Image (cartoon, rainbow, N blue to C red):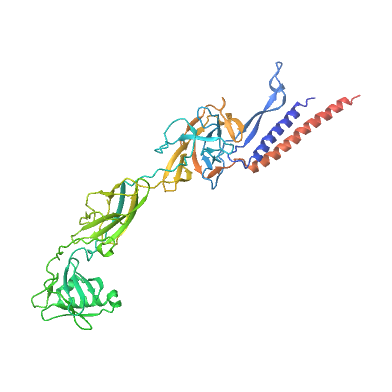
Length: 530
């Protein structure tokens, strides 16, 4: 009688249950790859015969085969939790020096940063990759993989060298009232001034110290003195500033065909005569606008503290060589010359630069050659701030003023505030000044025969003769897979399948024990023969 078959069957079921138990125990281990026991039958060697006369003598454990299939990926809140979506292994080492470290491979991407700034596993092994140049932040395309270290030092400030602003200036705007010296007629009955500006048929009124207020008069009304008088009266009496100040006027024409503005309480405020822009016809009752108004030459009175001296403005922060921020203000002034504006620039509310012209074509596009050079003297120890102002793409359309883009290349110093890892394995630092810098790129490895890897425990595998040499590269290359940050790869163990397999092996174990019991009963029968 032979008990060998039953014993080998019991041993095989036990080995299979060991593999199943290990799978179940590691069902929550990140990056774990389940395994199953593989068996082969055993036949006794015989020189006398073969074929149908041979009887097997049991089974034998052939191998424990690991399943390197993709596990589910679960999101986490740790930016250094990394999952490989695809083939490949993380490359880790027990030394920061690439040439002397013992290298192992893992699918467990639960990493953290140690006290020295290196990215490490839970066991303290260093995650390896290609370190970026500490000055330029450029990651070499090739090189020997070593431990990746996060640089926590301050990032140097960078002085502004170029400011790019794209905006729209409202073509409907009028020159500021104090941008040139206009014609004036002084009122005779009450203190007040009537100012006829040099463009856009606008009356600029100051009455009893109230104003100045710009009163628009439609050009078509100049064809008739009565219509002109009515339009002027309506415009003045509808102005909220004058109404709130108690100003009310009557406007009429006199026997000479002139427009007369009178305070309703009595007294002539002002008369438009031949010294103003609008001139009446020779007694025929018709008011005629004689050509385009001509501005009266005067001294430029732009004052950044006086909003009435410029049309619109905007501001941008720029930086000096020490990283100190400065407020650059731009003031735009509509001139009386068609399609021409002026821009003044000041730093930290200081003295503005000399006006520079901005010319636009008939389609509203900027034609002035860009960029404009800006030079400012600083007193805080930094080098003088010299940069270019580029308004390319700015327009003069008939719509409200608005800034479309506002960029500049300067920044202050910054501290490391966070890190992120891209799908290509690039480790990038985020700084408190809004800048980012590449710190390195992970290296992944793949093997021709991953089942030939030597299992070293701790979710680690090591290279062996059966696995072949590793093929290393950046994530995304070949079959290495890509990186998913803030995520971990779960164990690929299917608990339901393992429980069913456990029941199956339990039945197999019971069946093998029955064969041994039967063999024992037969042997006992032979022993009891008389």
